[in-house]
Length: 172
Image (spheres, rainbow, N blue to C red):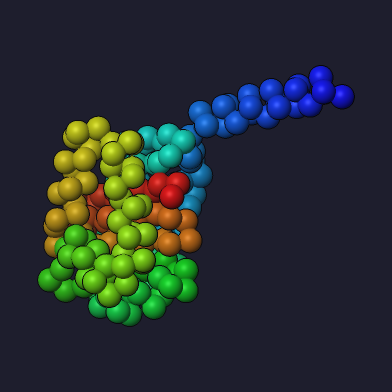
């Protein structure tokens, strides 16, 4: 009996080690998820590790699919939708995604931290220096809008003039 228990423990340990090596996402699954939200073209970069995914996609259009994404022009309206688990595009006049996240945290620290953690985790583990620089540019640009999917712990930065979508997801 003890011998069987030892084998079960070893088997479970091996499965745990193997599962920690699997990526969080597969590119084709992320593309399928995003195709309902935006108009994707090709993939520029895609990295997925057990704790995060970060990707850059070219876009065929700088618009969002409004039937799947609620577009809001103020953070308070977006917060109500985020709390109900809806995918929200924050298109706040005069505000870049960084400003939107700051405003969100000042209203609701919990929801703001959720959005922030979707960006910070992948930026540390799944992005090289150039990727981080490009994502920072999008984060600070008023040409970008923030799309937040709280149910899937994903944040997207849609840079309109460059027609790029930065996708980040952490396993937090």
